[in-house]
Length: 376
Image (cartoon, rainbow, N blue to C red; front, side):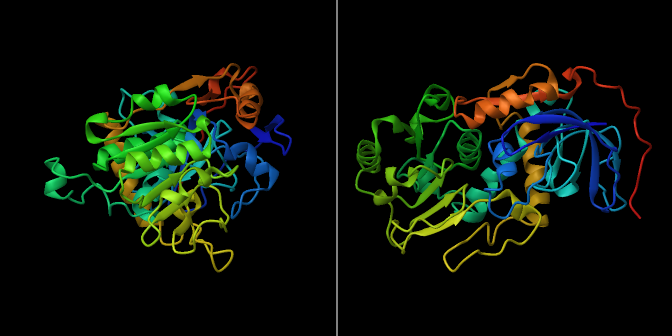
């Protein structure tokens, strides 16, 4: 099969490699129809991401058809239409004709969901639920009953600030918060503000603040929006270039909690404010802190967490509760991947996911369907 390799310079080359074989009892082999691009896909080859080993095929968002399953897989069978998140930094990623995922990070698709739409979901959705229910613990889960007084509008719930609201993971947090009844939302965005308007509910106090005004003005608007309350929960989907300067001084110094998508302890944030890093890697392994102050996904994720939320994500998609992120299909399949990743690296994309349709790859040799496999 053909597989794309991404270099540290974000150049992409195509290679002929063997089709993966299943060796883990909970693995699922998927013929990839579509995959989408994430910023980590160009960052991983540069060896700058903590806890993730470098792997030339850095794609992780999968949508396609199950070819074969491991001996312990009960939820899927060959021919099923699925989407899945491949384990970051391991072989057999999604930038290829076939990819491997685990059962607990795979979910079913109905016939009404296109593969182009579905491949935009896995990474963003899993990061969103890990952040809300694992790291910040705004709610234990969607089953937690909201206080009756809040339901009746007699008083507001605890505000959640989402920084980088138009990014795929920021938007996912907003969408999941809406499903779980978490309001009001303070959404910080820039060029993608118009898109974010389609996600929020102003009747429940949700607002949008433009970060391009500068940290002091953004902080002022955050405080004005809070109306004297202290900010308890923050999800920072940017996590670099001093993004925390826009909000941390409005946080509750006793019970405030902020989770980042990029690791590292921010020394200028008061020690009493809890800092953590939301990492998809916690779905597959127990992450260890790099230092006394680091919490890299500690206490969130794991196999059971993945199983539970995979079923919920699949259900929310089927019921159309979970909206699809805006996307653009790149030309020439895997041969168009380099241009897409370089556009992400240069920061030229806003509120758009780039989708790669594998069948659009020029000179793609038609591979015969592998025989059904099972692990021993």
